[in-house]
Length: 88
Image 1 (cartoon, rainbow, N blue to C red):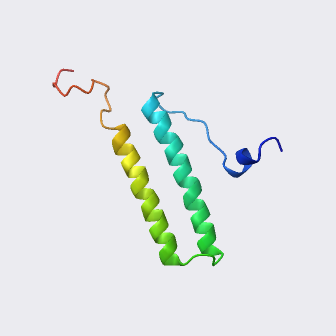
Image 2: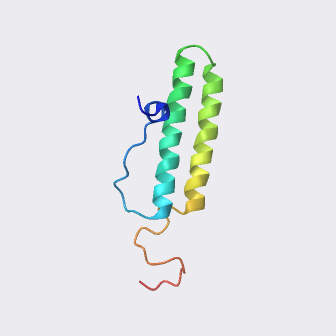
């Protein structure tokens, strides 16, 4: 095995519209999915309680939502600029 982190934390290729905001959000989304998977596995194995798992996933969700809002992903789907002047 060349790199242990590639095995434990695989990254999928991004196929969407390429711009820095989308790439960063995609990385954040993949990390969210990995961490939720780990939390679910810990809860299933009885290592953490269901309430604790719920709270951890909820915190991760808020982090992901804040990331989306800060990056303004999906705010301007037609790419007409951020000026808000209404000119298309």
